[in-house]
Amino acid sequence: MDTKQYIQIFDELDDNDQSNSATKNGRKQKYPLRNPKKESESDHQFKSQQDDSASTYKFTYKAARFEEWWLLDSIGPFYEHKLINDVLRRLKGGKEASVYLCRASPENEASLLAAKVYRPRSLRNLKNDQVYRTGRTDLGKDGKRLVKEADINAIIKRTAYGEEVRHTSWIAYEFSTLEMLHAAGADVPKPVSMEKNAILMEYIGDAGNAAPTLNTVTLERDEARELFDRVIRNLDLLLTLERIHGDLSAYNILYWDGDITLIDFPQVTFTEANPSSWVIFLRDVTRVCQYFRSQGVKCDARKLAADLWTSHGHQVVKEVHPLYLDAEKKEDRRLWEKQK
Ligand SMILES: Nc1ncnc2c1ncn2[C@@H]1O[C@H](COP(=O)(O)OP(=O)(O)OP(=O)(O)O)[C@@H](O)[C@H]1O
Ligand SMILES: [Mg+2]
View (cartoon, rainbow, N blue to C red):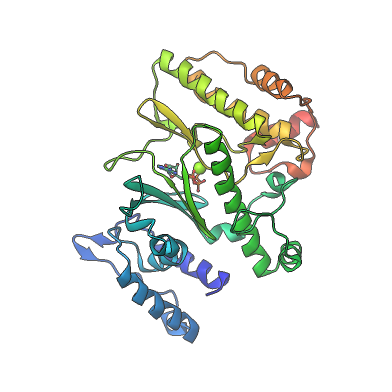
């Protein structure tokens, strides 16, 4: 099954996305193929294979058919390696990935795990990722630097295969960053395993509810101050490891049992090698401050960012090359206006 076919399948899934309501009024819904008559022989073979394997894996979650194929292809190895034995429900379908609650196999210490499964859509939509990739060497599925010339050339030439390698590298960065941060004692989910299109990690929440993202939570002022300090401690730790989250805001921080957990790291940025690192860092701090200010915490984002940045021996660089700005993001447009 190639990337194009996956994309078509997900287009169909999008058209039919019922957000886990595969059963309606107690009756199973059918999701017709867009061009049922045009189904190719290879499609047909793939689907029959998947139907076979579907019966060997347990899915309490009633996925639409196409989603189930995609899930099987992406997280099948987690079953095979006895990491999970069921998909219970979809926690969230994000822009780039869907996150599923899985039951861990009895061999694991945790009973529940979260699987983040990247969407093929993101292959076409690795939007402005170049700004984050600058200064990062692409990684393979094993989390090691890509060394094969053929892989590197495919990425440069942007062949379909190259796009897939790039996609896996994007995910490998999320996984390896979680590993690095978790080992350093940061507040991140414990990473468990990675496949070419999915990562498995600690689940934050309980059987009934997943942890909400911080932007939906109202805090008492004292707790807000405490959690703000905790986020800053994490930002500081990231800087010690010469990394910046790159998309930090209250939307990418989970809140559970009075604690925070930072998530969503594929765009992690290198402080040293990326010419836009200061601006990216400033944006992260600004967004964090925006939320905590709304919860009664007094903070000056620019001063705080500059203090943290310079305490790690970096210089505050004001300019950012327009190539690294995203015209679709308000903050980036504002920066551009300021720089002009
Ligand atoms: N380890 C986890 N435990 C519980 N919930 C999680 C976990 N990881 C992610 N989630 C949930 O899944 C959502 C999407 O995850 P994430 O932010 O990593 O993906 P994304 O594709 O970037 O999503 P978005 O486009 O919404 O930012 C999170 O907002 C959160 O609700
Ligand atoms: Mg996110």
